Length: 133
Image (cartoon, rainbow, N blue to C red):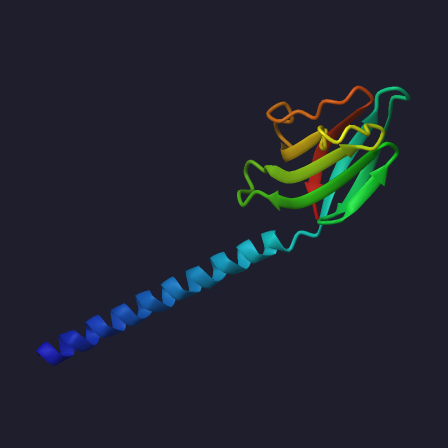
């Protein structure tokens, strides 16, 4: 009787272990999909000419756009589908500014839903985050 009960408990533990293992594998694979984002989509508005342009930045590489040197370090889509949030770590240099004390015009996280949290402040250009691919 005791042996039969131990076998049943062992089967339940094995099923729970298998279920936990499957959940862990699924969670790791969904996070790996989020880490494999290679491109960041941003829009740049030229305030003088009132024209905007969609730029596709490859993460980790510099991109020259007129007087700006833009680099996207990392881009991440949210894991929740009901309220999508896109965040990206972006660095922007103004190439006209030759002062070595002020290296970056913008260096930080940018949020697609709330661009005013970390605003990009430039007299000629405006940048906002559109998406990750």
